[in-house]
Length: 149
Length: 338
Image (tube, rainbow over all chains, first blue to last red; front, side, top):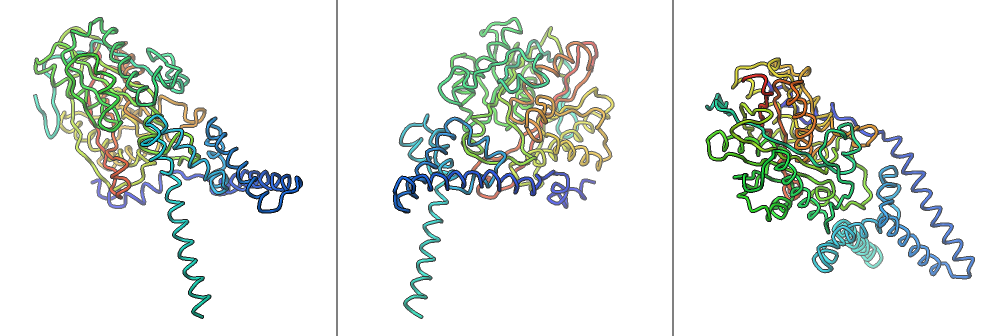
């Protein structure tokens, strides 16, 4: 008797499960992510105005964004922002800082080596690994196209 | 006396002699706030870390339950307890100083049903005068074990449920008491191939449907024989699926059905999405709303069916599905004989 639902269980479940509004998610990601980037741009302009060259101003900007994200993570605010912003807080460098700071805080109780040390990159680790791997692949392609052809 | 496929009916009484529930701050702000024995606003329960917090919660539940039953530690022959953490560390570290023989149980969020089942078998067989059955869960320790660090910025799906910080304990004995356990139906592992750990209701609903159907068939009863049929933590999506699955078997329980996961929070105001989950969800709702209504005679006979999703982060990463399990316990008020 249960045959019919059981046979198409995945599609049945999909039908009865509500999904979040993509439009709303995209809008929130756009304006909150945009706000973070605008803040970054303001920092950059500020450092340039202090007489720094473009590279140095960029480094200081990144340090400030990372610091702000880590502080907001520590005070439990970043995760609340991310609930609304989604990709808007995930994609900028602040999202990467959050993914490193949050396990460090969570696993601190398990010690500096097995807690913080082993777990700090539990979320960011794959990004680092595959980011480096992707850059190596692109480097290889560049090398082939540059020297072979 | 064993019945049908998977049930036991108790001829001699197994009595509920006392119960207690302790919950965290968020649960204490929910619709059942006035029914819990204690609400603790410190998420760490005075402990050093989340696991320690849950251990302290377990110990407090044990002591409060024993006190509520008018008993002392030495009166308890066995404890049947469990939690969600790896190797049951909340239970083992929380209860180690009680010095009472312990059966540590893992049935995921169905553990309260499992502990009441085994406890009632033990009492019914005359192996103990008093046993303590209890479980707990903690939002933060569960998030840490099964999802992401608390500070990590991520979006929860609408089908996700919120793990209850809290738990409940029940003292079972062979005399007196305030309510009776008159039968149990033990659940099988049921797997419909669901893999979404943010949709636990869909993973567990087939198990709940199976246990309820088997129970009704084993006891030769219909849903109308119960004032309430109460599942553990299916949430709103799981509830829809459960009703559809049972409807397909020709069994309609929408009038009797209630889900603990939909009672403990106000999902709109408290932003808990599909509902609540965790061992502590069914345990704390049992030891507040349900037993209060049974003891006061508002409900004469209730089928309590905690539901569990049997997975670990490892099995999930390895791409395995998430099977469910559900254990049914018949609880009756003293005014009605089974």
